[in-house]
Length: 291
Image (cartoon, rainbow, N blue to C red; front, side):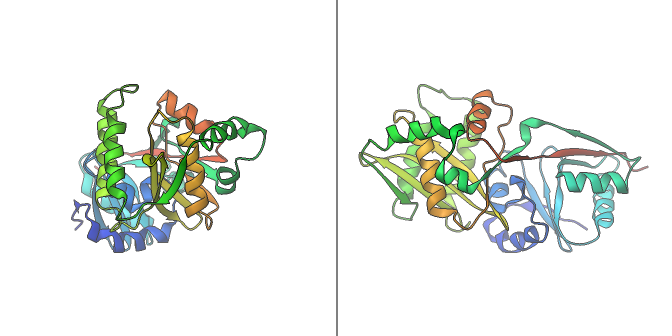
């Protein structure tokens, strides 16, 4: 019997243990991501033996953990019956394994919109090379201002809350349903920032918080950035918070996962401008109905 529950901070310890067994690089395999977005996407979680199971309003994320793949797939197929089992995301290795195990029972599809952008930490840290020349120019303009970087602490996180509200209603970008969803997820993360073990940083310009970011360890060699926000009045603030935070918090990692672009054109342009070293592919897998 699998019993699904709301995502609560107290689940972090056991969930993280099971997530480490798989060491997947997709952003949905971080407990912080599941917690932040749980209300937006109706995420529920459960444990079955040594598997961590994530269910959302679309289907299931392929379970992280260790054990018999055939067993956990069979259990979930029975749980879904008479509806077919649907995995909303699986990496390429998992997809190929399932295709070998169930050659006549699955249909595979994918969408570039939901691939995660993976960058080399050193590239984001140094911004060296001809391809990133424009980023260095943005930074040089920013560094001419009266700025300071600080880690996020209990003493200054309240200023990040205030900046988030300003970001939500910036006249230049307006208010939208998607922006409201993102705002809700970011606020939920910050309200439980320290209990979730997040690491973050902020930028001040003339003493005021103009940008912040935070994230956590995703897998053995990768850090995932859950949020990065900057106000538009200061040129180069996004480039600066990105670089300063990577230099502050990510020295032990080889890669930085900056999550997907969801098909948003401006977001895709911004993420591509940092030249990811590769994309973390995600595959949707639909099983035949259990008769």
